[in-house]
Length: 190
Image 1 (cartoon, rainbow, N blue to C red):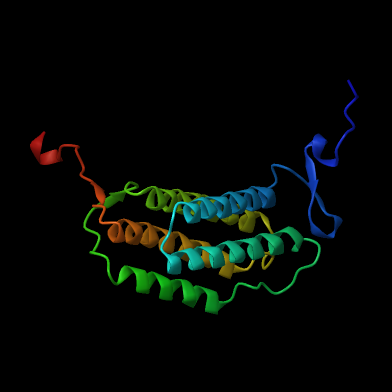
Image 2 (image 1 turned 135 degrees about the vertical axis):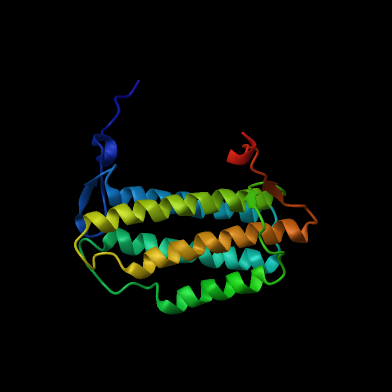
């Protein structure tokens, strides 16, 4: 058996852009790893058969998430203006409004259920919320202005869009939404 030769990341560190080395559990890598996971979940949702317009949207979202990750990976060494702009936020809000227009109003908490594609979009939404939390930790530990507040707003709106898309997939498939009915007795019935 040949001896293993050590790899640069074997000791728990990795290299970001600009030759910056960080521990693999650093806040920036927590964000990057969660964005990577989110992008993969969107890819899985696409493989499960999203409607064509939604599939194109999901592909664009994957590209934007990669751009955010690339910028976060090099921002410590070479800060630059973010590529996520107010126009990206307006585009997400427009997509939310467009897809939500045909949905019934939310009356109860909606449980992640329905078609495989809708369930996968719900998983992507949950991972997006985790990315948002990880990004908040990174922002709190970074110098002011190191991370654009537009990136935080983008992830917040993206999670909302993924929720709406999951609902739209179920509606288009004729799948009734599962809602949570609070089974706990009220104080007046005890």
